[in-house]
Amino acid sequence: MTFEFLETYLPMQCGRSPHTVESYRDALSLFRRYLLAELGISVAKFTFGECTRDCVLGFIAYLAKSDSKPGTRNQRLAALKSYVAFAADKDVTVQSMALQVKRVPQCKVPKAEKAVIPEDAMAELLRQPANTKMGLRDRTIMILLYDSGARLAEILGLRITDAMISGDNPYIRVNGKGSKQRVIPISLKTAGHLAQYISVFHGHGCPETSLLFLTIIKGVAGQMSEGNVERFLKAYADKARLSCPSVPGKVHPHMFRRTRATELYQKGVSLPLVSRLLGHANLDTTKIYARPSLKMLRDAIESVETPVDRAERPLWKGNEEMMVKLTGLR
Image (tube, rainbow, N blue to C red; front, side, top):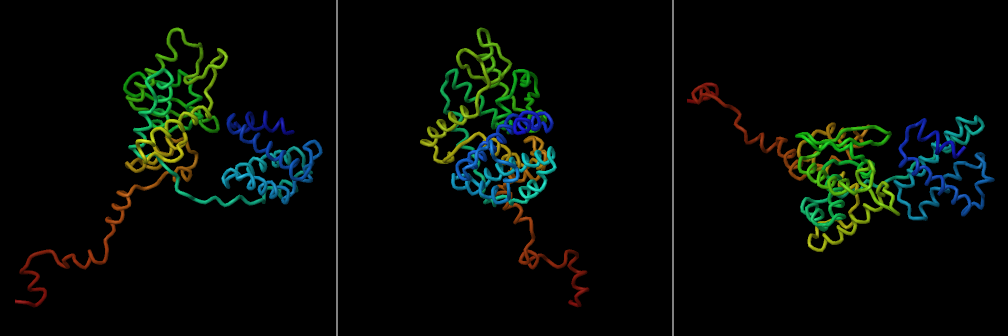
């Protein structure tokens, strides 16, 4: 049943991305380890009748002891709920357990303000890659992450044919969550960087592959891993911080997306347009990025009339002689 859930139900019937399927696989693998380590139950002997509310709450506590963050614990819980609900649809006797698991509450997630990369820090980061072939690749990925606001998985999944960089309206075509395709406009400058990258990495004598960004392992071209990008970003951030203290303490790929979305919002782009650019199905998700700038806050405050302003405003605007007559003065 687990194999069917991961290999058939999620990707083929629900249309979940490979990244999501792997996340669910990780959650169920952790649950298996919890059963063995904490309850002494082998997965071969574990039954759905033992998957009680207390069992699942114990799993959440087990994750917490492993320093798993509340948001991550909620993701693991969601995967387990989905799996038990799938089992209940296949076997009616599991329904009562599915209801118990469904009622397990999520962990409270502290709403800390997410960090963005300041303008001077972004410029310093982009200056770090050396003028080498690998440096060109790294700089192009960083520029594309920022300019497009796309997810890292979407960037690494690009094919050469997905980059339309000729003409006056360059864009990339990405496959987002739920296999939803969207078109993202990019600047002419970014298109120029992409063109240079393609000429170097996909020119004469280069490996035959349709992947835009690639790594070669044992002579075989494959898709670059997210971990590889995270590693070189950390190295460039550590180096850039030496000359630019405003570089955040921890720089990761999603910060480029968050920074771009926040910047667009602060420059007056409407939230629905930002949401469409990011590929969000729900506008509420985009509101996380809607952090107003100090100028936006100041303009909002100054646009509201205070009692003092109203008191200082003249009560009458008109002819002086008419005012005298109306007030009974001479």
